[in-house]
Image (cartoon, rainbow, N blue to C red):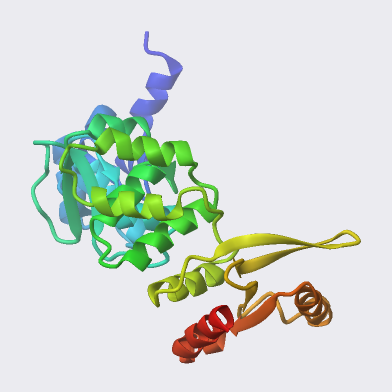
Length: 318
């Protein structure tokens, strides 16, 4: 006799199967998944012809009326790959929250010699070490993505400027998504394999090795501005003990040739009453300890970055 579960499954209509299967897949369902629950190809084709199912990718469909967003497209790219697949490169970086710019093209990494046919809006990347990428993969928003270290490595190959690569790395460290062992392991595993972006990744790693990440995105961007202008890297979140239980953390600090504190006053965080009262006290105490305090507001950072660089350089050189 058939089990109760089997009988219930047989009673489900095609629309019910689509709803159940697509629930955790950003509204995408595949032909193979429908076949597995005894839906025939003829039934699927009838739904397509009637417009109740819409083809999103080869063998992958979305129900009519569902909003077509980026994550739906990414899910369709993964499920239609017909091979193990992972969201990667800057697409994965955006899902981790370490790249604020959502790419239009969806990057997908697959095993070598398993590249699907090209299609609009999707960039497939073949990987010799896909098994390594798969072993360290994670799930973000219901999508399988390359691990953070591998995501940074892949992104280094396509990010044109060194500050952009530093920005990605620093944000991953600030959010505590990855530790140094994972970052170095990723470099060692891929060394000697002619991998695109490997030298860029190593340069970033050597630049940041042993340093603390900036406490805010704004402070990190100010630090990148100063570095790109040729100034030495500043120490982020530098602790200063004023005594009496007052411990301050300087956003960006230089300890030589002079004590220079660069305080980054963002668009939020310094407008409420307590900050209005305490920020001058903090500044006064740092100055009493011999620090030259340079305050950088968001507006000056955007409108007069050259002036910010000039002031910090003058403070350092005297």
